[in-house]
Image (cartoon, rainbow, N blue to C red):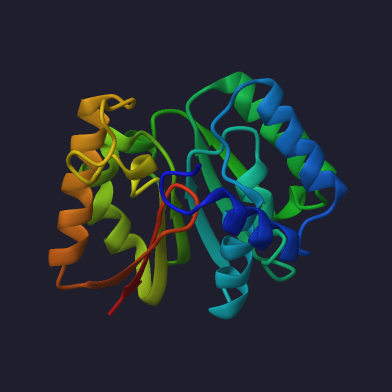
Length: 215
């Protein structure tokens, strides 16, 4: 049984999702074979819909992996739109570029290889949408820079904010996740809740999603 949403409910919601296709399913299967922690299709659908909803032209992603989440975002961008995405592993970055081509979004994606904390200093805003799915221990330290890169009315979407329920003390006993990661995510959530620039809603979808709008 899922720690956040019961499995039957998740299965029902998955059955309603018609926004994916065989290409996205193949990329997801590639990630599963490689044991990569990719987002689920329902999170992908949320990213796609949010990108469309705000009329995003420029998007930024922290944590490319093999291009699965980025494909959901980039497919919602208009002609001439651009997703810039950061990946620290050159081999994964190469696979992501190939998968972006498979998904038909090669011209709307730019993969930058390196430590996201360093790459953030090199990109120029404003961005309409930012997806944070990188190193959990860097979430809080990156928040000010990501907020600065967002346009007013832009969205910061953060994955894994419930950390399979472990951000709630004692809910998962014994804990399975790294306690340092759990503490980092809890601190990040607290920062979001206190932010004077961001208004945030936390969604109990899969591993938890925070959607923050910049005022």
